[in-house]
Image (cartoon, rainbow, N blue to C red; front, top):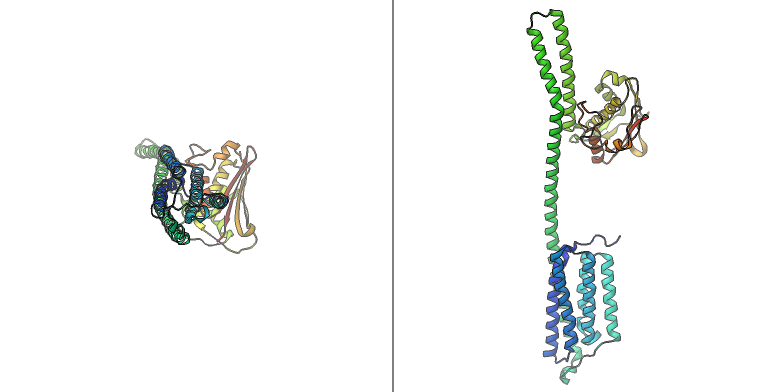
Length: 424
């Protein structure tokens, strides 16, 4: 909606309070000067009543600032009140002949600079109507000195000059000081955001380290036990050499499995799927698929069905991060499937984008589980050495390059993960 990008009221209102005190002092000074030097007879009781009303609202605004943060409607209401006060003062002191009609511009400028289109339009309309009403009803100027009354035109011109100088000074003062206050506020907010970002990164790092330590503790403990068993077998002379070799080979195979488990944990912890340092480069989809097959274990690679476009035009995309993301999605699909079930990877090129769809016919997930599947450290495979970061890193990778990741899953039917990416 127009005008929604308004300046913060908590910054504007303190300066508006100061400006109103200055305006009150100038209006009182102008009234005294007109009465003393130009011998104008003014209706002091109603004039002072209007000024006192303005002073009372300023005191109330000061108390409001100390109590709680002001709202924009309060600033707009104050400016409309000021328009009414200015209209009353002009009507009591000559009406349209009063040169201080330019003071309306101060309220209009403040509204335009701080409250946006709709409030500034409302204040401008109120000012126009208010000044127009002084044409219909006002108190004519009454001069005590007939000689001064004969020089009304000259006095009016001098009054216009004084009014213009006062309005220009008020506008320049307010806008410049408010801009400085807003700049200071923006600097403070930027520093606060930077501090919060650093705190979030530190918290994420600590959480990641704690999760990795927890997941690495079990395989490292197993490796330690197996190493002790290998040492015991090789030192025990009563065991037949052939039996010793078989037992050592069995333990070594278990050690290798645990090392691979540690490697998977470290791969997720380092967040290779987000390693966007490498620039995007041309990549053929056939070579991408072949690279994925080589990185999968032989059993999984044999169960993978791939569909790629016929054209061989390379796509420009961050290659290594994409491989890591797809490898993680494929491993998730194989983990959710039975050994006899196959997993499909379909690559399409709709509308100049590149879309990867991974489909499994495994166990599937309930809706509440699927909703949390992209959360960091949430895993449906406890005890597998999985940190629950695969989908989280995949979605983060997609977000960073302007893509998106979608997941659909039904219990007993399977899961479909779609990675839609732009090509550069």
